[in-house]
Length: 129
Image 1 (cartoon, rainbow, N blue to C red):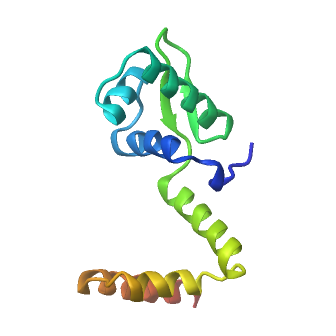
Image 2 (cartoon, rainbow, N blue to C red):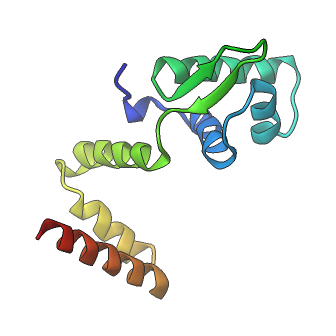
Image 3 (cartoon, one colour):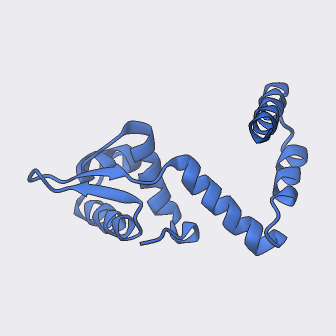
């Protein structure tokens, strides 16, 4: 199933972030990582969110043991790229320039971030040659 980045909710994104940051996990581990603690209703909510993420192709489930283990099947950078592209399509006629301009000018990038951005642009220019 093709992932639609706008279909990933904030609650689902919290689970994906926990999987990206800490690696594969059971439902119980994700409840602890994301919510700190929780009863049956929180466990059921996380279980339902994981089922939806699995249907969207964002997580894989290892069913080989009695307790299932979930792994992110989409990279953070891939999801970021897809979501930014969707925003650019919806708000900017497909152009990333207005988004980048806003981020660079509006957020006040640090000197280190500007240096990293210049380095990235230089690297991309060298690859295209």
